[in-house]
Image 1: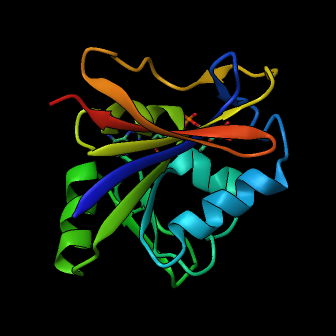
Image 2: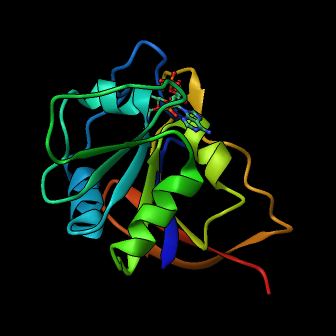
Length: 160
Ligand SMILES: NC(=O)c1ccc[n+]([C@@H]2O[C@H](COP(=O)([O-])OP(=O)(O)OC[C@H]3O[C@@H](n4cnc5c(N)ncnc54)[C@H](OP(=O)(O)O)[C@@H]3O)[C@@H](O)[C@H]2O)c1
């Protein structure tokens, strides 16, 4: 099962605000995110899920929390206490891919476990205080670039 990080990152590394709201709204980027992840499980931190407010449609929404006995009243949501358990569940369901969709804490934790990263570099800097973790260029290389109107999608793969 391929494990993929997907993220939208402003030119200055910002991915969000600790107050919850997204610093920008790009329909084009949202469409790219939706079409890429549709039909596959998406793993996210509890904070990101709460900023979304409800599960994203057409995808199994997996939420990570360290709390025990944590629950949401949504049928299409699964909750796990570790990334390892979340991956194991997806493997058992025979998914071909799983997407790690953030936020910063979960990206940081997942960086050592994933096969690929799809990073949309937005064409602007953003006002925020949550950042994508540092990408170690000794480990990751840009395998391809895909130019869109408002951003460029960089596909990172592990160096051989
Ligand atoms: N631009 C983008 O592509 C993008 C994507 C996603 C999110 N965001 C932004 O990112 C921000 C949220 O990021 P964040 O770093 O504050 O929070 P987060 O990563 O979404 O969630 C953090 C929470 O996840 C749980 N957690 C963390 N590590 C865990 C582990 N190893 N095992 C189990 N659970 C774990 C904990 O939940 P408990 O406290 O319940 O234990 C922790 O408080 C928001 O501003 C959001 O808008 C941006």
